[in-house]
Image 1 (spheres, rainbow, N blue to C red):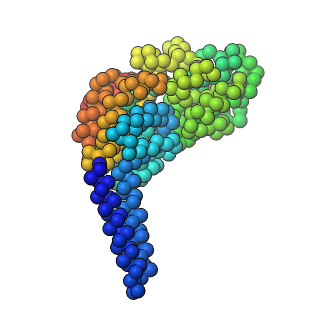
Image 2 (image 1 turned 45 degrees about the horizontal axis):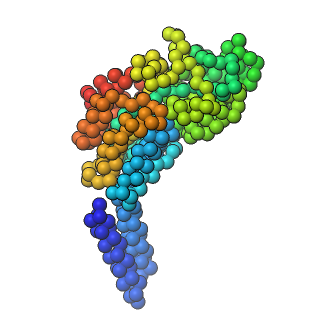
Length: 357
């Protein structure tokens, strides 16, 4: 890394020297000076790229990646390296990743066909690394003393497009519930959680009512539900676990009895269809040189089980992370999901897919 930096600095110094000579010549043109300035900027950008890993995407995956990034940068050997972790939702993150603006995308759903095409068009490859399982959680305010469980049919009744402006009170969902306003909070349209929830509950991805408070940042949704007795919302399990003192999770009844989200119910494939895998997607072009991105991704896979558990998600078995090492080392580009999310997927089924990849 130090030798790369020295080479980059020498290039900048050389470019500056050329520019100085050019500007001191009486016959030097303005266009020549402009071209040399552009070269300096280009070299500077290369230096930044060599020392910065840019990550964006899912707010669901963000707590895992942020925790690992902080631990990575805490190592004195990495203190000159920057890991920039932002949130724009899975869809928003893929918009940047597939145009080469980031090296890693956090994703709460698999890459979609349209995103695969965009990546292909721009010559951007992707290594798909599943890192955890999530129990997508439906929550209400703790002062809500009437709702303890909810069926998939009732969730569809609330969230389908036809409900907009019509299903606005709790007793419209279930007659035994009170005649109180129903205030909704949910994922924004650039969120992978939005894609997954609508497909799992409504039956079609991105089919949803629009008259609700939407955000790609789950902390915004937590804040809304925690302050309103009449609220209902949904987001990743880690945000519920982090804020259990100001939220109440509803049991989900898919026709086989009401089940609360938990590590145990996800591992036993009981919390369906709202269990889902979480991913990071890594640009293989940046891995090939065995530089800082390779070092960080290797560190990520190593630390993922502890970080996943610490923030409240469900870690994969050891075999899952071992497969990630193999795919990263071999530069295994592609996806096992054919450009679409898969409902009712279990941890075992995910591992079997990855093993055949």
